[in-house]
Image (cartoon, rainbow, N blue to C red; front, side, top):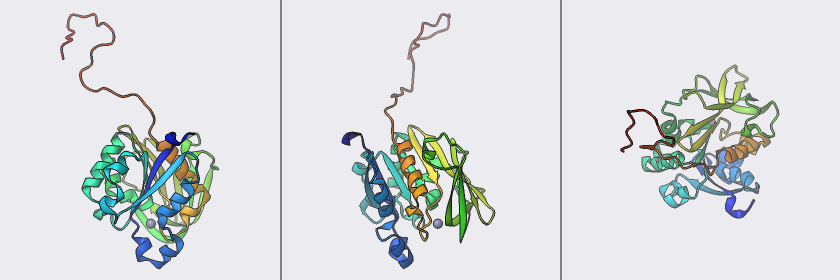
Length: 252
Ligand code: ZN
């Protein structure tokens, strides 16, 4: 694949736990965005940059957003600090075709809730329990290279009901040791944009170093990347065929 056809990925991280918690800083010395950038940048089809909350415009200037094919989003304790103006610009870019990968606690981010139109709340528990993710759509591009299921040995539990619209495509369902289940890999189409919500990614567990998680995120970037599709033309449409009745009006 030539340089100009690479997928430009921007990995956005709130980057607060890494600053406030020694445990998280030890686990992710480059930040979770840095850990994700490390494995994505090894893929020949992908180029990465990162952006964080405390940068001017959260690191998401118009120039950055306009050159981003897929935006990855991790947030948790500072969703409210993300400016509505930036959220509006991200929303417009998604409708116009930019892919969006929403990780873990970003289920409650402004941008995901705006795109879903629902509350997006769920049950949760941090007990280091096992999570088993079942692939329920084995032909889906995001499941490429996976087994029937994979396990995360220590995970935060997220449980149903997860207040989201019914996904357009559901790739994973998670089971947790404590008994709950969750729709944990959810695809949506909004305008020309593709959105993937992926549940794993709690900050105190080494989840972004796990091979299956890396594979899913890499696959989802490729799935969510914009395609060179048709330009649709809304509004008055002159008939393509001649309509043979007495009532047709060709005026606009
Ligand atoms: Zn968490």
